[in-house]
Length: 133
Image (cartoon, rainbow, N blue to C red; front, side, top):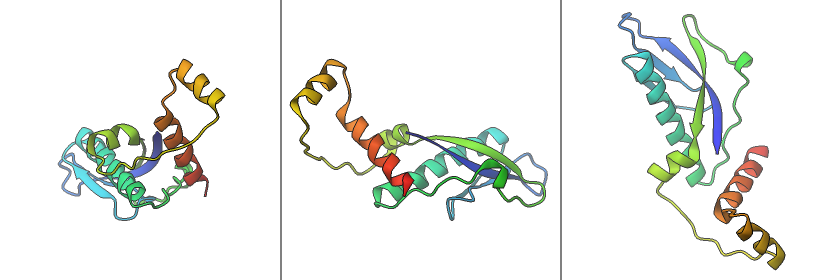
């Protein structure tokens, strides 16, 4: 699952080329980088970790503010960050829960013939439902 969240980048006050990165929709999610590239990398990592922690605790992921509605202070730059939560969870996730489920035989046959990953489909559907609330 890929989520898109806006962040505000603020240049360091000493004009050294670094940036502070704040995610308005993710309370307390703030990081920085000594260069723009590092700030973007660190921002992606921090926001992905924030989201994964929330999901692992059973919390609802906050909806992203529309780009045009992001409030910024003077000197700030709004940027959209693409967060691949599945890839991040695969690399850093700590919790997995095994679930047993029952589906009609015809649906099982269809899914197996089409190489459908049951776990992935269920995860994506549940996450979509959690974001709708």
